[in-house]
Length: 223
DNA sequence: GCGACAG
DNA sequence: ATCTTGTCGC
Image (cartoon, rainbow, N blue to C red; front, side):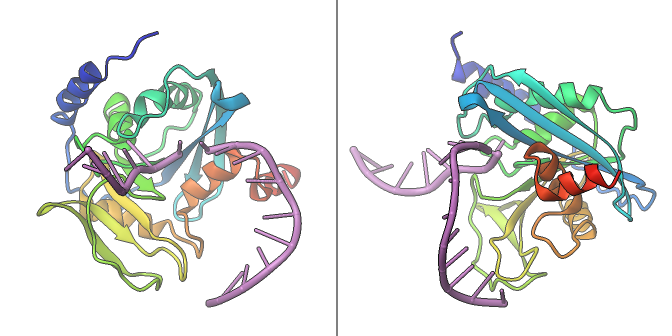
């Protein structure tokens, strides 16, 4: 297969125009889902995990793992083309659709304002938030590694997200609105999902499920 | 030209 | 992302 990045870049610019950052504090949220993607066999297989949790108790309602042949390489700025096929597959298996989706990666904190969280939000027509463990683009003021600290992530003078110190002495999280939510609400909901760990619960569970970590193993045994 | 660069 | 033990700091 051949890849036409100029074409995909144009596609992202077109899609970015459809992203809507609506400020809608929604106190009625009852289900929040998280996603995480991993790879197997030298990257030839993409493994996407999605998990739906209750809010605010964070009880696991259901989870699914989709394994598909990898069809696109990793290219910074084009991550969604590599991961969304498996994520859509996992999403279609969900019986209980969530009210909000936390995606591992950037939302609009992207060169063309279309990180994987925004792209997925458009494809699913769902409110999404980008929760990234490292920065793709933008600048910010360094801050103390004290839980609760927040500083805006800027591109020139435009705010594209937030740099959140989610836990003491840990690297910060890069939060940005994905789709159908505002920057302020995105930060609000991620904070609501923090339980003393660096990652918000939906993301932490998705990570544990995708990588079969202790948290998930323990869950499977006791249930 | 050079460095940066989600997962 | 993934391959991997011990180790340092909270």
